[in-house]
Image 1: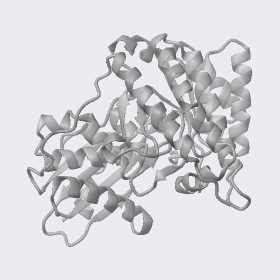
Image 2 (image 1 turned 180 degrees about the horizontal axis):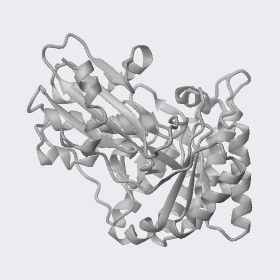
Image 3 (image 1 turned 120 degrees about the vertical axis):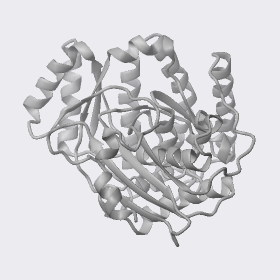
Length: 400
């Protein structure tokens, strides 16, 4: 069973994209142009980078072009500093092939293929051929031993860290390139589509539609100085829950759901609602959008054809969702966001978070709740930084 997207809807999504772009320009968002000279300045060297995982507000599923990671429609997320990815990248002319080591293990197969595809795009764009070695690890900001749960956006942070490190090396730390968030966002998209939003930081919007050209498919940061006081009041509570679900599986089945096209059609309207809520410092509206689209995402995944559909939640996910509704009925400002997996991220206010944590732990004592804030864009690290010290042993082990 396959559901194709009608040409009329594809045309409408392009029109919606143009209207969103015009709206952003009228609100004086800076839509950067790409650097004029893409050619590599240095085809060897090493760099260290850090990026934060993303959590969707207005989600997405389905690629109009899987190879180029072009989504059917735009999406909004925020960076979640409950954890981070630290990456070391080295372009080395002595290497006969690309190598990658994630979380202490060498990767092969599909994971390696995705990393090589991302590096190949950067190499083609910059006209270089040097192979690379990548050492990368995901961390959670907790002293309690906790597995990185499914649906916490770490593939996005890994993608953004890789892209920034590569940009630093091949353009020899030239500010024209490092400050071009559009370029880094495009580079970040090729390993994980959501990587483009991790690169942008804060609340970010990924501009995409089925006919997007590769360099017109990127993310911009939506929160600005006037939003900072509001951003500072928001507390994120992350509840990692493990799962063997593969996100690419969900992307593949999404367009087959009878609800998928209805989801596409509402997106422009919801993006305008989100930006207005951000301008009005309205956490209740942002939270309501995150919850609504969490349900839309799950509805699309569950209504794919038999033997392909996905139920990503587990019983504790639903238990916490229902508890959040009860807490809100009792006057608390708390909302859930769920991406592809059973893990949850709660949005609440800084002055209410302790009571929320205590209540959720009373019904699910086996889960670690990790406190966090909305994180910034991907960033370069010095070789002697504390974050790099965390993977120094792995770098020495895997890189000659």
